[in-house]
Image (cartoon, rainbow, N blue to C red):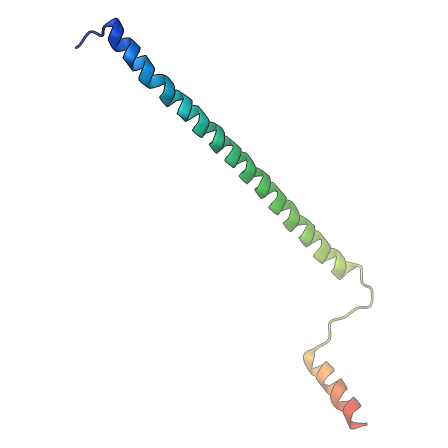
Amino acid sequence: MKLMTKRDLEQRLELTKPRYERQEIRLYVLLQSMQNNRDNIKQIEYALLVMERVSTQRRRHIPGRRFLNYNSVLSYFKRERGR
């Protein structure tokens, strides 16, 4: 085991401090990116929820509305053309 001198420790400290500062910067950027992704996920989930609510409300709140069969529409236009 090698004993470290004061000079060795100072050199090590000089190398370690900048590495730590770069790591802090990378961590900050990563945390910002994660926050942005978290916000995007929440917004997308909310948009999907609103779209689902709107689609179910449209079906419920239109009284007397039915979806017509393709054949019934086609036969209507055939009858109208024949007149």
